[in-house]
Length: 185
Ligand SMILES: Cc1cc2nc3c(=O)[nH]c(=O)nc-3n(C[C@H](O)[C@H](O)[C@H](O)COP(=O)(O)O)c2cc1C
Image 1: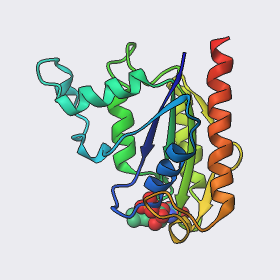
Image 2 (image 1 turned 30 degrees about the vertical axis):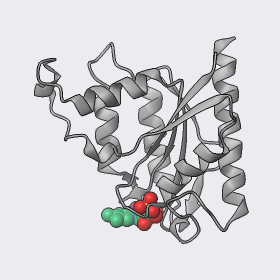
Image 3 (image 1 turned 90 degrees about the horizontal axis):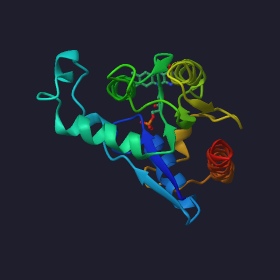
Image 4 (image 1 turned 135 degrees about the vertical axis):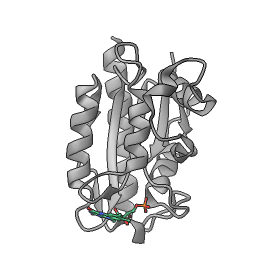
């Protein structure tokens, strides 16, 4: 059975380097893996529990949940904002984590990396890996995925001037695929 990976970037910026990291992962993914990039988690409304009434759940939320449900693994690249995850990414996680007890964001293998400012996203990675782990996922944070001042070296189309960044993304993909395969045995 082929492996389905969903790529998610946690920045709405047009020239986002984290969008570039996800595009690079899609480009480097082996041909027997289906790697889909989610185009815009910024299109999701702010989480509102009133909208859990099925007659009121927006189509964009249903589509987001279905994409997550279909994926074996998530490849997330996101910046750190004020020592934590960006609001747009946390909002997307909140939507995927409900309804409680039957939500789609559990049992996934998730790779987390960050192109950020000076910290390289260390705080964000620590917080988000805790959150995603508590939701019941296996989170991969090795080899170290903290890329300090990454926007200077990663374009939003996935091109990079730094071979170590391509090597990191390649290693993470391998780890993600190997972990999914090991959970299927
Ligand atoms: C509101 C805001 C807060 C930020 N806080 C941090 C931070 O706490 N640590 C850090 O390393 N970079 C911080 N940055 C810098 C971003 O992580 C950095 O610009 C990153 O490259 C943006 O990702 P992108 O290229 O995908 O848009 C912050 C940027 C903004 C706009």
